[in-house]
Length: 142
Image (tube, rainbow, N blue to C red; front, top):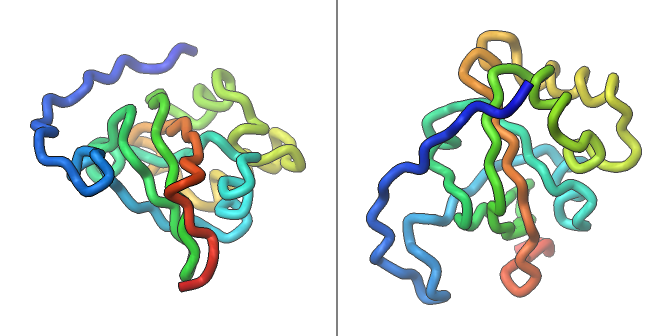
């Protein structure tokens, strides 16, 4: 099954922050420790979320701060694919980019279902492709 088409919202991004990035293009997501560590090391390059309004506001090119406790890693969204189900997403996306090299397909399905019940899946499934921004990452405690 192919990703659903997702129109890019029309947003005025004329206000810039001090790094030259559109001020309204930075988002923060909290994540569980094992997945945070995989993103911080570059082993996990796809974050899966359901279609909450906050997630639907994220667009390609936005900064995404991934937080776990006092640690944060800053990434840039390089691509967004929307699917109608986890099964469709898993058929199209690279499972190792989602769960890391040590998680097989069945473990990945269980982990996703543990986080998101069927009523959340019905909101739509988003695969956020991420690239770490080394100069902007802070994985140490504050």
